[in-house]
View (spheres, one colour):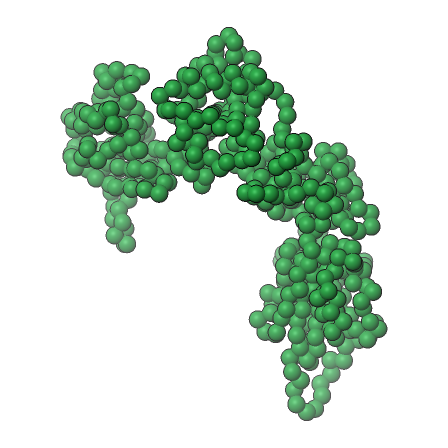
Length: 508
C-alpha cells in the first residue's frame, strides 16, 4: 500500500482536504450505497479501524473499490477489552488512541487530501467514525454518507417488521447494567440490543426478567458470511460474537409474539396522571394484557393497542368491575385492571383481592403493581411536606361513617402527624372539607401550612400553599388532594419568588 508523503513543500499552502464518514452497510458489499462507492473512488486516503491482528471488517467490505494508489491508514485499536495497564485505564487508552488517530488524519487534510473513513453500518450509529467526526468535523469540510444499519439488516433477515403504527422501538447497548436493560425492555414495544458477545448472558437474563424472552430473536453477522438466526432462548452463550444483535420485533399481526399461558388479573397503578407516570413494570403489564378493565377516566390514560379490548365503567362499581375482570381471567384472558395512583391506596387492589377470595376465583392468579400515589406526587410538586411521619385519610363517607373519619382525624392531629387527605369533596359531598378544617383547627394553629394540589401531573395542574386558616373549602373538589402540615412543617421562599414547604426529619 502506498505511504503518504507528509514532507513540507515550497509555494502556496494547499487547500484543505475534505473529510468523509462513509457508511458501508451491515456487511454485504452489495448493500453499499452508490454515494459510498463514489466517495471511495474520489478519496486520496482511505482510513479504517481494526484490532491489533490487523484485519478490518470495514476494509473487507469495501475491498473491491480500493485502488493501488489509495493511501491507506489503518487505525489500530490499542485494546479491544477493558483490560489495560494504561494509567488512565481503558477510557484513557481509548481517548489517547482517538486523539492520535485524528491527528494522523489531520496531517492528510492539512495537505489538501480527501480522507474517507470507512465505517460498518452507519457512521453515526454506534460507530468508531464518530470519534473522528467530533475531533475533525469542526475544522474541515465534512460529509457523512449514511449506511444501512445492522438493525435494519437484522429485521430484513428475520423477515419481520420491527415496529408498526404507534409502536415504539428502543435500541440498547448490551453493555448497560442488567437491571437497566430489564427496565427498558419491559417498558418498550419493540427492541434491538446491540453489542452482544460477552454481554449475552446478562442480555438474556434481562429479556427473561422483563418478560420478553419468548418473543426475542437472535441475528448474528446479518448479510455476512457465517450469518445465523434463531430464537434467542436457544442460543449457546459461548457461541455469541460481538457482531450479533437481539431483536424483539413488532407484535402487530404476529400472534406468536404475544405471551401465552393461563389467564390472570394484574392490578396496575398508573400514577396520578398520564404516561409519564407509568413505571416500566406497569407499561409491560398494560402491553401484555388482552383486556383492560377500569374506570373510564383512567382507561383513557392508557395508549390504545391493536387487538386489545377495553371495558370502561363508572367509578362507583368497583366490586362488579373486580368480579368481571376475574371472570375474564378464569376463561383464560390476561386482564389488566387499571387504577389511578397506586392501586393499593383507596383504589382497585382491595376490591380485586376481596373478590378473589371467593371460592370460584381462588385459582385465578392475581398480581398488584404499584404506582406513584397522588400524595407523593402532590408533595413533590410542593417540596417535601411528607418528609417526616404522616397519615393518609380518605374524607369520603361513602364506605365508612363520618364519625370514624372524624375520630381518625383527631387522633392523627393529636399525634402531630402530617395529613394527606384523599377524596375531599365531590358534587354530592360538599361539607366534609369544612368539617375537617374546623376539627383540625381545634388541634392545629391557623398558620399550619396546607398544600392544595389539583390535577397533579395533568394539564390543569394547580399547586398552592395556604394556611389552615385560609383554606377555602369551596375551592376543593374530587380532583384535589390536601396535605395538612404538622407543627414542624415549614414554608420558605426561593430566590425566584416561588414558595416550597417541607417537614424536617429532625423533630422538636
